[in-house]
Image 1 (tube, rainbow, N blue to C red):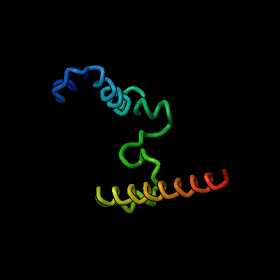
Image 2 (image 1 turned 60 degrees about the vertical axis):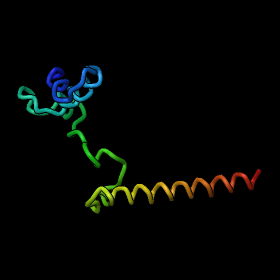
Image 3 (image 1 turned 180 degrees about the horizontal axis):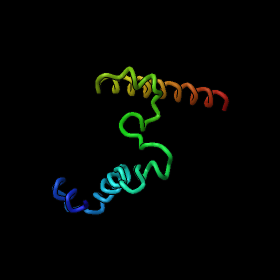
Image 4 (image 1 turned 120 degrees about the vertical axis):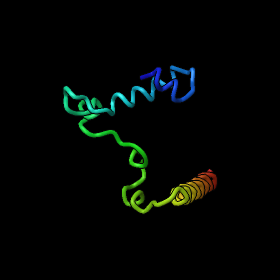
Length: 95
């Protein structure tokens, strides 16, 4: 599998390809145990895409385009910066 990944990716960095091959093997159905190795160990299917983030399910359902995601990220980032500035100002005033 690693050789195939290296050929497909036109890469000679086999150590980097190990991550992708490991993921593929752990997320593929194993015919003897009847489930993926990931599910056998953790009891659930692996989360991929936006489900692997900390975004609430209600927010993920509203996303339709990459721009929607960027807007949420930018809004959250701006809110976080504002909150940090307010917090820092409060701390500075107390000193």
